[in-house]
Length: 428
Image (cartoon, rainbow, N blue to C red; front, top):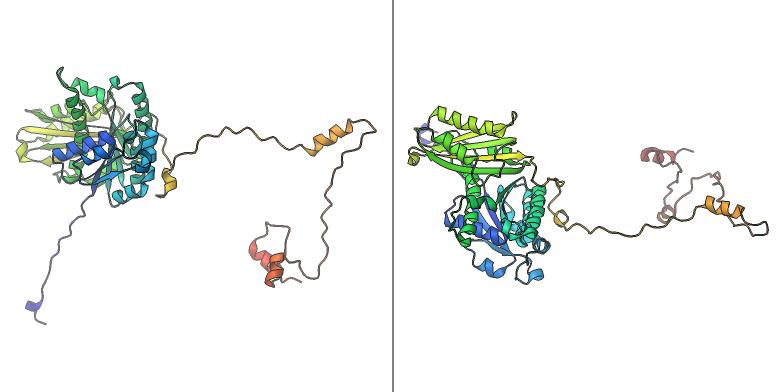
């Protein structure tokens, strides 16, 4: 065969795309998804779940699922988390169909109400059991919403922490510091939706955007899997010390709770800037964040993305994980099981059955009988006869052995291994 007849085909291997899905659960979660779609969040698939059919119909999400129609008749959960949980359990198989194939799942919701608080832990549990990196991004209610919603939110947060890899909880009260005095209630809740959007986008952009010092899904997974509570912040700054200034703003942004990154066990820093971004600027920014963690063993991973459109502006995104801090609900991890209905069933109620009375002991009856007058009739006591061991020319057979025409001996010593018991049948 002539060499010119040979054809060589060079096929470039294309890395599989990380499939990221965002599930908005309940009214707050659905509003957050709508905000993400409005801002053009790319590289992410969206789905919303709600018990309120009317609210679900108005959502711009491409994938929608009405849950719990048999329980709520499409009218919502009535601010009852137990109804929201039952609604999700009713449609577990449909939720699994929407989750399958995802590498990373964001579960976003506004805690304190019924559907989001009750159904979000079920969705997170199913996503985790399917092998996806599961991150819950939720808001905690404003103080003026009352103690009932606050307590329900704390319970829902603890349940999410037990099943999700990482939970980012954003207190709405911190948004008041960012709002002007003339901000309307509508704009206030919209600001909360935008904060959820920033949290999801800040993480997804690291995965979907290639960088000079690249951080991909494996880096995100290593720092977020099984890490409990997390904080996330993003900020931009301009000027000669833009990176350090943006880093300082990021660790103090409203996405972070009052403690900032203090006590974090792992921190991922992603810095975006033009080619003018200096090495010493990056060093100063990462050092500032490391010192703020106040943990000698903290693991810092940083990435750098070049974007000439940034000019002299620098953007810093900080993801801090592994918090164990006072004021956050204690996380009790649930054991991993297969994806079945049993893995998400409602726990059985605690039974308060009265203790069963123990049967009278023979010794007590005999002592009582000894105290009776001589003329009283003695209490009959049946004493089981000592077992006799008659000699057989052939071993005795069970009823099953008689029926099957087999000769299977019975032995009193059940500790004898099965193979030895089988051999003894042939010993004469």
